[in-house]
Length: 371
Image 1 (cartoon, rainbow, N blue to C red):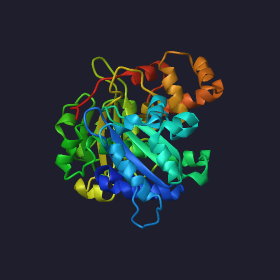
Image 2: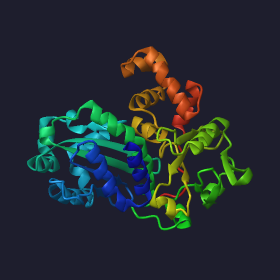
Image 3: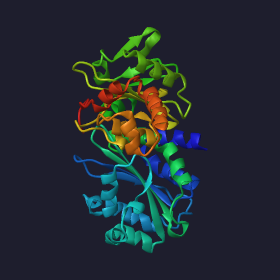
Image 4: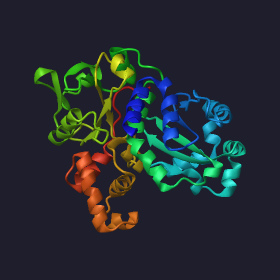
């Protein structure tokens, strides 16, 4: 069931009208009331989609829809104490936001009080900071009588989070508009990008990627490879196992000399997206590790590198230069557990030393044009 939903998530990345059905499906699987996606940017109005009610079975839909539309107007989201608390927390997973708010703060949140009056209680939220400047937020809601969400529900949502993050990156870059055709869609994304077949043959690239000869190179029979050996091994594995939901699809490339650290994302082209891209199976897009010179937050790391919440917290703490032992103490885990997490982080980021990891995570230079 999750594999089918993952396909639908990647399809919605290029056809935003499908987000409504995806969010409804995710809500149904996890017994949630509704779901929403918001794209927040300093340079454009807040955009988003809310879960569908096509079957007429969502009794809360008529209550939530007006609040959702109000939220999109101007900067109304900045008036919500719950929203601001979540962004201050910058969590590396889905969290129950109200658990971090006082009763007074909840009562001051007009949106939450209106939802409570409609019988809607806890919110499970996750915000993923995009290196291109946007903040993509996913919100799922429960009935008041369902009580506080258990950890199992949060864990199931977190299984989908890396897919939500990559699909959210694409939707944010497209401005929540439908991709029209291969060439125009690659241009609209505004990032170095290419479309590959399932076998790894390149169908088309945009000019931004063509200018990245020091990072990406053409191979025999129309293939593509990365010049960094370790990153290329992960890249080729991701192409070979593109249908596997657990394969690492966000591959970091460490900074070198004057070149910034990058992340190469492989976004599966599923269902209708496959047709939009002329039968292509994989979109390859490159982003910078961070949009600023600040130390990456756990949510950025988790969104970009497929790290688990625990791995993301460890990696973010390590960027401050602390030892692994000291970092384990700060994170509240045993040194042996920290070592295990670090080994998983090395595998996913293509690094082999703590100094390499810190250098990679601190790399920061924006790529491509800003929308």
